[in-house]
Length: 113
Length: 115
Image 1 (cartoon, each protein chain N blue to C red):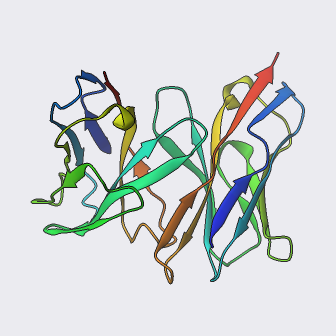
Image 2 (image 1 turned 60 degrees about the horizontal axis):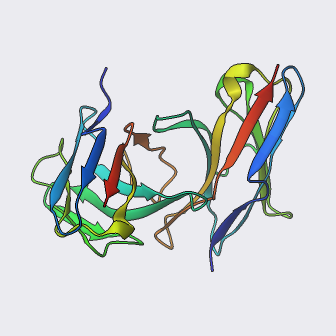
């Protein structure tokens, strides 16, 4: 069965330190992978997407993610956290062949001054 | 530049009441969808539409109805509200299929409490 697992429900970092949010997935096809960010009382906003081109994907606000097929992972990183990065982050897998759209459970990122 | 607009932002209902959550988009997207967000469960697809007059069920369709009479609007109806439907509801639109590589554009949500 297709699934998405975000390995941490909550991550806390200090401002200026690196961010790593982990996502593993399973898929029977060649999926598209997304990271979305959700600020309080707001809808989800696209950070970046992978669609079988370059395995290292750059997104907005300095975020990037690397698709590793052998590890079935799509981890999100940022070299230096900013206070405005505090939000909830969702890893999402879509499969057009299987007609599937699956959201991870979300990772809440806290940034300490 | 409105994007996807959801109304109302907040609503409290009593069990058994009905209501319609409104969703409108101004990007001329063919594809629209409804989700519910519950703590620790991410978003789950309720219903979606691939164009005016065409809708289909998602992962959790029971208790909800939809219709799509225009490209712009995609209302979600709760026919007889139940406490289990207390949630945050999001509407989204996209240029391509929700199962494709096209990103979705989300509204800011409707927070619904059912007593």
